[in-house]
Image 1 (cartoon, one colour):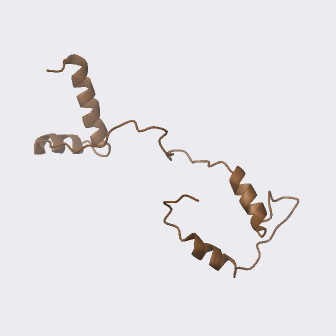
Image 2 (cartoon, rainbow, N blue to C red):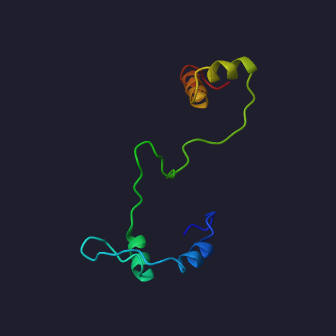
Image 3 (cartoon, helix red, strand yellow):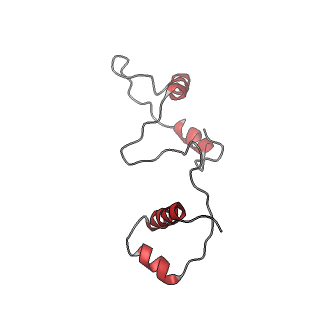
Length: 103
């Protein structure tokens, strides 16, 4: 469990203790969901699988968070293109630095 998780795991465990047992078929199921040790062992080996279009955690930050003041017309221009306007601003600035040297 992640230390910064917002899930109240103590409550989850407390409430799960009062739950009725989950049906378990040893022939078809990978583990017994009613056995805490089996659940912990299964989860320790589990791999997170994300669906198409879902992002995972960044391995290393690729961009730097910063605050920048732009003219209202610049912001309006890029926002008019819809979602992803900040990425388009970044692309425009990257194109600029390809053709200009630092002062």
